[in-house]
Length: 87
Image 1: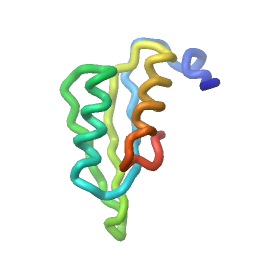
Image 2: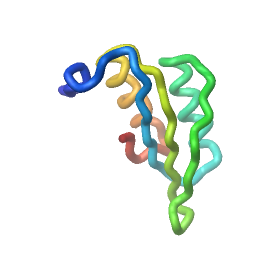
Image 3: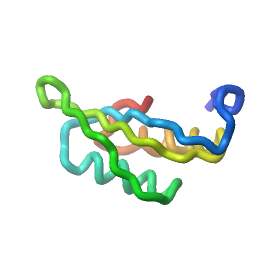
Image 4: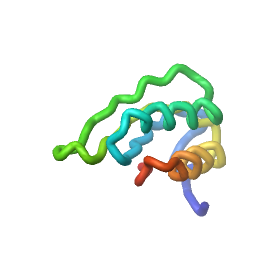
């Protein structure tokens, strides 16, 4: 990934990730499990359903330690089956 996170952020820092995907009770579980592998901690994402209920978004604050750490989180979260976008 060619990102400029290291130019924009002072690491370590907390960064809020917004994850959007298919509305399914398993999605928040999968997202938290993925985050636990790379940034162990106690996470409670806020979940917001779409207006029609087909999709949901999760907002979660994660302590990232470096540009590479942040890129890894984006890559791993994006690869989850129910996830469609990570911002």
